[in-house]
Image (cartoon, rainbow over all chains, first blue to last red; front, side):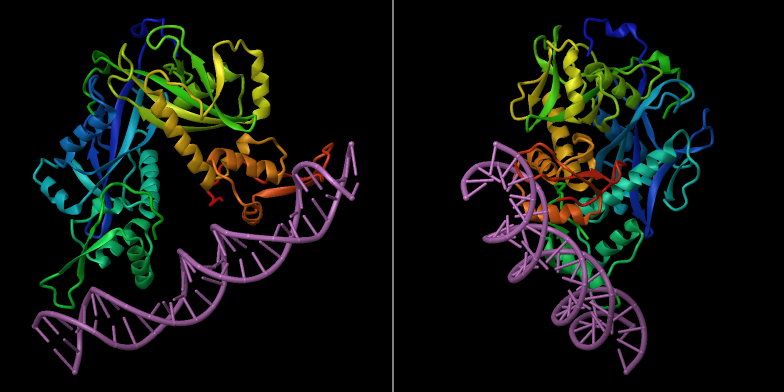
Length: 226
Length: 226
DNA sequence: TGAATAGTGTCTTTCAGACAATATGCC
DNA sequence: GGCATATTGTCTGAAAGACACTATTCA
């Protein structure tokens, strides 16, 4: 790394963070998109993001943007990949550090109060053509999410504090896009010893109530899942 | 992402790429480091890297730096993580996109011809305190390497074109830092059907010659290994 | 024939996957 | 009792892991 130079005499790229925000809403995996109202890619939908300030870390920038778009804090956030093709933005050189976030559907409801005319949750099966290289970023994020689901416990961040095994299974099925055998799923998930039986049951359902579970730990863990 | 602004009216961070270059030399996993001859961190060892030019992609920048440091092309290269703490460089804001590279020990020999007074291969068990946050970057790279070794076929990039099963096993053992059972290793690796028997044997050894194998494909593949 | 490394097979245990009947609560 | 969902166990096949002896070449 050259250091004798004056760093400021060179042109520098702009640096942004983009955040792929996933949630499960109405039994579908959805991603939060915003509609651009200026060129380039005016009227295209895009992944939310913004410039990194000079005195904030990348993660802090991602958290700030997330907060601005959704009003939600305390979510699962993970750096995804850095995209830096010289021509990915037609205006100037922009390098973007992408993050992906998982938000619990309950907290998402809060967000409906913000002015959301040009903000929308899209089912990942119905995402329109996106601005810039955001299609590629989204595909990458989806791949990572599926991988994370199978090999770690991140799923906790999509669920409420307490949940039934059926809800947990449904979440896996929605994200993986395939059905799972109920008995095998339960056998496997319980054998991992990452759930705690709360001794409570669902109420006010017109059928047999289900046991409610919580995660023993919400620290991210690498575990062989499913 | 704001777009109505003039992008150039803001301060921008500098962007570099740093490359963790691994190889196996003398039966040890080694990493290439360079000694800094200017402040800050003068005389500290550091991971090689440099600024990203305005018209080159991140990967192109990494390949260029790799070439400059080692004279080697055609290696395994993968983006690792982007480090961007505001104070990671005491001079100014520098965001670094780290890559890790795997180089075949044979090709490495070529490099000895460059002026290498302040370039050195360090066994990963003997790395000194590094400049900036490079300790952290190296730790991260090592973790990723071990993971990749177990779940993909990247090991091909550390070996010669043809190799014996014993050499292959030795490579795994060196990187994972543990011994493996010879019969189980062979059973597993052959069952994956990623190797091809060349019908040739090692020569000029004073013991039973070993079969030489090659990889059927050198395209990166996700595979459950070991 | 001794030194050095190559090469090979069985048993046990664990885990994934296929598969269907009973239990409970509410109306 | 009927409806809706919750809960539970067995069998089979595949793969992982423990473990030791024979084969080949050269000096």
